[in-house]
Length: 232
Image (tube, rainbow, N blue to C red; front, side):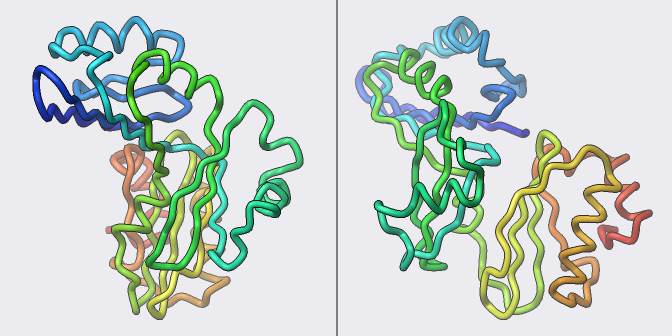
């Protein structure tokens, strides 16, 4: 995953606002390196100190989560009495074990994104920033919020840590929102072709938009092109 960390200092003496991206690999810092969760406390504290940032002065912390455990639920079905049942139906009976539930409103498509976060991540972040008000957002919800509802077919694919996060738009509506784990280019190409067949897409080079750190993998792009995915 390509994690980006944005540091915003409102006042060097009082209020500090911080934005981080986290995934299963850890936390990505501005220098481009990933801090593994096992080293998060020591390494991130050192980086903050070098940037003259006191963690106790961080009042607002926005965490962008990249994690495959999510469910996009139409707002009309968003009932606190049933949302756990919907999650367990989609992700498995024990999906909540060791994880915490968060939600993100997606008003452009009248839906709620339910997503899980490992409790150990939250515990570490809370220890690192003890006085911060922490807000969690998800990659998928962020992408939906800033993406136009295209009339012509458009497949957005975010590639990171051997997962493809896919949003498919057509006729001004979001038709598909899913994540697909893949081990090699054949599996990813098969999944993309299955979308084309299921929705009878007549695609071209503008149909598919790749994002994420693995989208910069030249060998992967060459392999997908060889497998008739129109990327170049």
